[in-house]
Image (cartoon, rainbow, N blue to C red; front, side, top):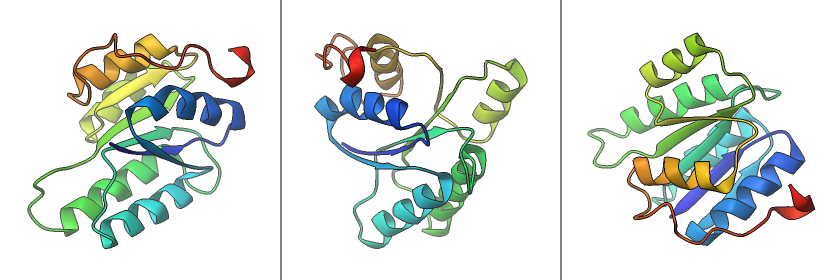
Length: 144
């Protein structure tokens, strides 16, 4: 599985990478603009991402805008045989924002702080892994 992480907080980016590396290769960027540029290149190279994790609040371009652009890029490619799964990650637990995220073709919504078990459960619900008990790295860097 190819995974793209867009998170401006260095600690959270490292934790996500630590939790997700057992499932595939991870690329990480700091903002939505870098995420959309990286995603576009992956499509051009015919090596698309399976999972994209987007923080909602980032500089340059937020995760909501990035999500919309990613979905537009996929649609421009023609009939989509496979589309990536997008998980929004945020500290905001506003119900309206969650509803809006799902209505805009989001596949998951994880509220910070999260743990490896919650992340694994989301991956299972999206059909990306078989069991949430799949071994994830025991503890993230920095001891969180």
